[in-house]
Length: 102
View 1 (cartoon, rainbow, N blue to C red):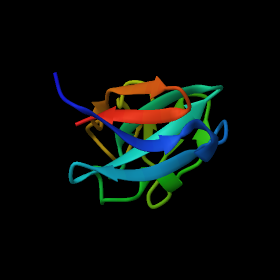
View 2: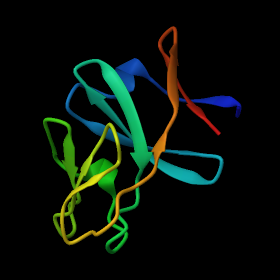
View 3: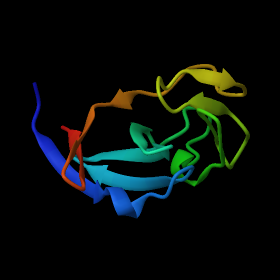
View 4: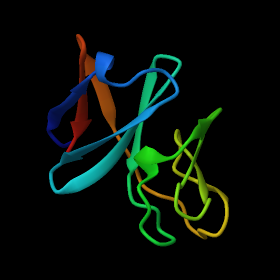
C-alpha cells in the first residue's frame, strides 16, 4: 500500500468538471461526478491530449484533441481513435482534502 498525498480540496473541482494535478511524477486528471471524485491518467494514449481539459458527459470524458472518450470511473476507452484505456488512481477524501495514493 502506498502513501496518500494531498493534491486538491473538494472546493477546487466543481461538479461535472476536471482538474489536472501532479503527484509523484504523474499527471492525474481529477473529476467530480456529482460529489464523488475519480482520478485517471491525464494523458490520452492516442496522441497525448490533456484529458483534464476535456468535456464530461455522464461518466465519460472526451479528449479535446482528437475525440477519444474514456470512462472516468474505470479508465476504459469508450470511443476511438484511442485503442487502450488509461490507468485509474486510488483517491480518498480526508475532511475537505482530496488525496491520491502514490
